[in-house]
Length: 187
Image (cartoon, rainbow, N blue to C red; front, side, top):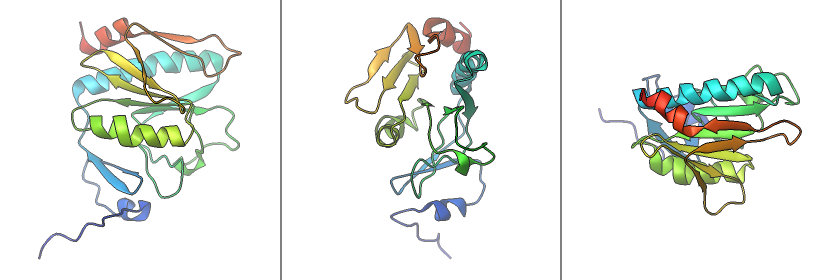
């Protein structure tokens, strides 16, 4: 008996029926994206960013940061799993399940060789279409962050200090990328 025929256009229901095999499954514009477990450095960068953003959010109360695995749907029939993401605090209802999330303030993907094409093209376009105010593509090897906004055709590339100010009534978070990458790399 051979492998079952894979659909050419995936649905969220079909993806949810896949076996739990330790891989991460995402569905973007009908395309199934399958990625292996993240690397040590990838997780180090995610942890460093999480700590910085979470501490700032704790004082400003602008939003709540979470990390994947998650099943975020900013439209119909999709499953997005950003490495890190911030949900606004003013969500119309308390968040109890992934389906309670209707918008993001920030989505962050940390590049790895297996995800770069999806992160830079497919997912970027999807977050831009959804109107996510900022999408960061973090490159641990180059020690840079590409910042995308919905209207951008090219990213802003940041290598030293990354400011983020989702609420003009609050002071900006300023992430020292040099220190953050050094912490993540252990250098």
